[in-house]
Amino acid sequence: MTGKEIMITTLRRSTIALLASSLLLTIGRGATLPFMTIYLTRRFQLEVDVIGYALSLALVVGVLFSMGFGILADRFDKKRYMVWSVLVFILGFSAIPLVNNAPLVVIFFALINCAYSVFSTVLKAWFADRLTAEKKARIFSLNYTILNIGWTVGPPIGTLLVMHSINLPFWLAAACAAFPLVFIQLFLQRDGAAAAQPGAAPWSPSVLLRDRALLWFTCSGLLASFVGGAFASCLSQYVLVVASSDF
Image (cartoon, rainbow, N blue to C red):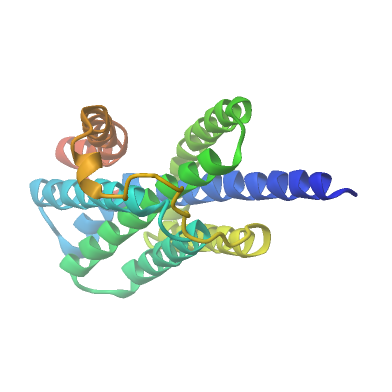
């Protein structure tokens, strides 16, 4: 094989590995998020309104972290970002069933949202750096489809597991995240920080803060997280109000 063919094969494997990682992480999140309200009610007897405030705060923290790491994504090694975010993802879901303190559970859940947001942001930056314009549209569309599949498959799996034990969805999420950790280590090459181009203006976050288009996109992402992410937890909150947490 020529050098070009090897590069194409490596890029294809890396892309497939990242798409598979995106699917597995989303399945894990989809299997747990709809049941967080029920978990907090059963385990700690929290009121529904308190749970709503806690989960909303965790989601907002995740969005804010994704903004910060999105700004820094081009300055450091993306593989390292992905590995650390998946490790935090595993740590958070493994710790939730083991702690007996409600604030700690909410903190770990916020860390999980931060890790998921960072992974999603850096994943898109990786695709944007390495794919051609034609392939970018195809892969971004495929990744969006994979996210929808994950959110479709995750909740039914979580329902089956929670019928046996309320802790099982969290262990499933941690196990699902272990595979992306292996995929990233095996199939992604480490890249250095982005080198400055000759004559280019020095990088500064203040330039991004003055970008109105970026501001609107960020606000849109914040609202979208409430429509998509918070809605999944609101369903279980609604069930608790009109019925109970019993299955």
